[in-house]
Length: 384
Image (tube, rainbow, N blue to C red):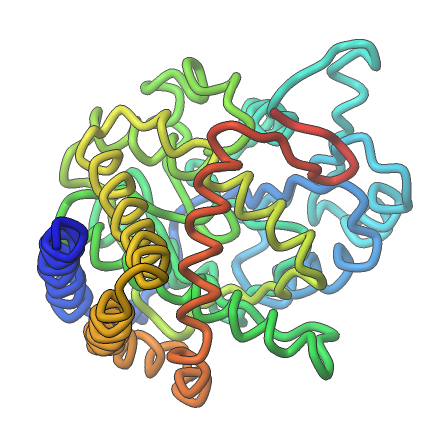
């Protein structure tokens, strides 16, 4: 009975949390850019390692934005690629469109870091001429009016940091791999919805480096990545938290379908798990203790399902409680997710959501544990 009481207590707190996020999403206004000519100088920074198959379409999508050339700079920072990433960047960024920086020109081969990406970004930001730094990843495709939307909200809101939407595409997913795509897409879409809601509630606790922007002056004021440069991930969220502390109320979220950056889902389960372990590895590094409490609570709530499942082998009625709470959990999450899915044009994917619930619970438990106590492979490197 104690297990049931604990599980129900966690469930009702979870309901309150999801309703809070749902309210935050609905209160976050949609954005329409002004018709005026952009005035902000922009540097788009793309850190890349072994992205020869993706960097061409990524750069071309940025160049096709039609942003005034005199206001735009593109910096591709090549992180010791062993393929043609840098050469392809050189070929596309000709005629003053941008340039390629190579990490090997700034670091010795013997120098070992736990976060090469932060170092790459730090170097590129130091070289940047733009007032506004915009980051994306080398495997992303940006929409046609991406830059106009970001600079528009930056200018209108006088923001120092702008979080913006990202969406997974299937890539080359086929057959059985479709399950992996739907799993990733739904999980990531949930996080994206929480990102928008959190910014509206002035929590500012989530964002994604594939689509964000920040003032270079504000970046320097908060000391850049100093204090978080030893952490393998977190070039996005941990920087956001520093900005939130220094500039409360000046974090914006760009809620526009015309600003959604697309990136392919991970091709295999091992790649996916490595990615999510990398993301969860920073969970206990947040200065904002409210976020740590929320993450710990969600972890315990998911553990409660394992406890109910195990107890069911001794008393079958525990399984009845398990299925009842799981059903109610699914319903309250759908209350939050339906409008988010409508924004991303992914309503049909919600049919898979109830079926993937058990797998998602196991994933939360595994990724959370391994993010704290394990290591992972990323871009050919082992990271702790």
